[in-house]
Length: 431
Ligand code: GDP
Ligand code: IMO
Ligand code: MG
Image (cartoon, rainbow, N blue to C red; front, side, top):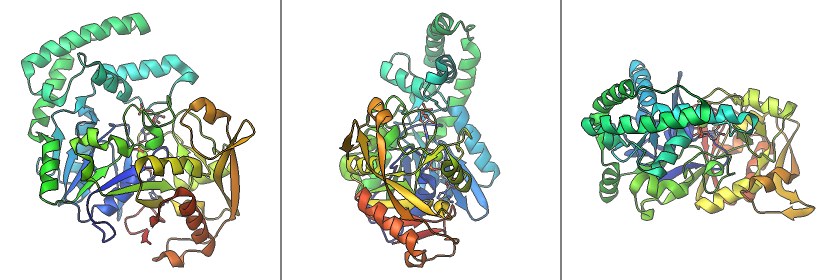
């Protein structure tokens, strides 16, 4: 790991996702021993650029590109085996080594079934404009079944074929009734589903392990662990902008249940924060700029979803939201990303507070009706010109860019230790 960090590190998003977690996890895992994903599923999309190669991961931890790293998919993830094997096959074809020597999956992890994806799709279509704007990867319905219990399937269940057959038959019969009643959908034959998932179970078997035990052993042995967050705090099902959130505790608060480790396991909480705001899908977004500023950011930042290719909604940096994200997750370090994207603007704006019903509001409220009514209070700073990409030290950046970073740091309430000025591993300044 970089000399910057001793001990174990959580890497989490401070906004609405796509902050560049993939890039920073990759940067921080140079000498890590273990990388673990603890939440979400194939709704995540993390991009890593290594020289001329660009990789997008959805389920695999980003440590997969570092030969010395053991990668774990924790129990808090919802695993779509079809998506997993597609990703594994794609990377194998590109020469990335993936085997049980560097990948293990928790036997407690819940499995995304075809009816979960169908339900996600059907609910979103039926809701029309009132939908959440999900990735349609079956995430919400799989977590709903996890809580429901009797209609869930875990990785461990794939390993017991006779019971799996009965289970799939029973659940499919139940789902067919639901789909017919709610969406007038034709019934699904459970047999091919069973055969497909039985085969997935056989392929996945060598990877299945007790990942919580592996982590606890790694802790005892003094190994370096990186906890790779997906999504971000404002998409956390409890602490985000509910109901426009994903269905997991994807903030740092979900690490202990999602990975199966005690709270003492982590010393560093690195928050990834982009230099502006984006969000994909529906929900309140106080600093959104549906105008030429938003378009400028989208085109320069290539702000199109890694998973769904949807154009991301873009806007100014929201310090009210980020302060909340820093507080609630106990952020010890910040990595600021995508600073280069703002280059060329005459002025940059920062939302420092909200106004609500004529009153100043300094603290974030994760209530969508309130957020839909707030008006951002902006502070304006001078912009900067010229490429940032040649800078090798923070002090080499244009002084207006430095001033912007220092102001963000003051407002966020935690030290900005890394500044990313391009997608590549090398385009990272340590402060
Ligand atoms: P994640 O979901 O948080 O891992 O982020 P994504 O990978 O979905 O989106 C971040 C995008 O920004 C990716 O295309 C990255 O390659 C890119 N990126 C990361 N850091 C920087 C940066 O500092 N500058 C630029 N221009 N692109 C970056
Ligand atoms: P990473 O890890 C950005 C959003 C979706 C939608 C909402 C619910 O790449 O930062 P879901 O399919 O999870 O039920 O959709 O959450 N969402 C993300 N937005 N980045 C992500 O992940 C996201 N994961 C989910 O767009 O609004
Ligand atoms: Mg992403």
